[in-house]
Length: 540
Image 1 (cartoon, rainbow, N blue to C red):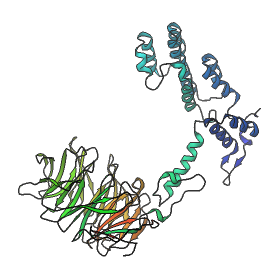
Image 2: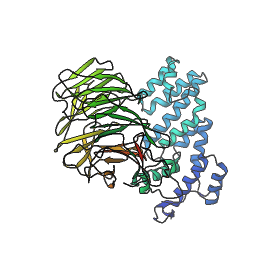
Image 3: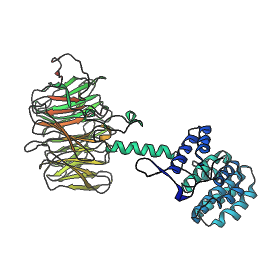
Image 4: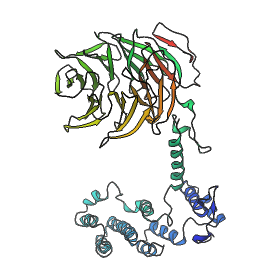
């Protein structure tokens, strides 16, 4: 038979740091063995170590709960060493509530009423719950509402659940919480992952056998392809939500839809022509079946991704459109105009609403949150407007420097803001806006340079730069991970594939788009220029 728990001063410690108490460690292992169904192993560990999982009183209490011996369990509850009277009352309430429902299930209404009046009510806690229990006596059908969904109607089947609830209530020294060992191990893995600057792979790759640490080889830093479909500077690019397409726009007045195959190869799908001015930006519909393109102070065009056909041209008499974005339900689109207004359009071209005044600038990005409620634009040179169109509430992000571009995180909680002073600021826009991080190192003096979130769980920040390099930072620590050379002109825009954390694209004044991947990828493809693609082995 297991020996009684040793006194507090006799506990040994194990582990090199000397912070793990041997008794606690053994008890938690025993608890894990029982939880995994290894009953014999758990009992053997208790016997061999001389350390019981629980005291004899707790074991008796547990069995009494499972057997439905309510009066005996209440008597034992007072003997297991609880100091806090409020815990005793709360635990007693749970037990008596269980007794009450089981009496009702057995159609012993008078006994249930007696339990309610003589045992539950005198505890003088949870008065609203006592009234709910009373309604079960007066009107039994209401019992279903009271019990559901947290408790089963057949009370006898929920005794193990009652035990779980009691376990959460009682101090862990008395009853060890369920899955405590799993929680500790998982917590250690999560902390290791969060401390890993280069973590950019599936959590399935993490192991208990070794401490987790990724290397730089998890960050896309090798040029896998050079896309050469444009004939002038490439200003903007963006992967589709599903990662199967990449859209780019250029000073050559065209946009291109590129297709990403299952092996990560990128090929030209459609070249979109029709704009009379350079194409400043693109925007994907939420289902990735349609694409918007915006000319510089010109028109917005809507394209079918599958066929490459232009479905509609959005124009406003006497004005030029400067930005575009989709409502998530794909029934409406938004655009900024060069009179500083924001317009909302039906797909057929009817203007539904127009927010006039200082709403946007001639050079501005436009983002719409995934719930369709907020529109985000640059309303001044140093300020962003967060317009809640439903609540008709306007919030602002004020910067000390001129804003050149911005990007919204996938979870709609953060904005990445590029500034004239060669800094990128990260703002939390959930609730009250708050500046949370700054990223430095890239070069910007004359052009609009764009940055993006990316990698696994968007744990990284990437940006273009006027020194022809792509810069990557660790989002949480703000540490610069690296600068990727290869382009021969300013890098205007970057986009990280949302479906593949190891794929990054960059657009440059050198008229090319580079696809970046992992260094250790064994890519073997033939050179191919006919479709606007040049495959590269990593050289410049």
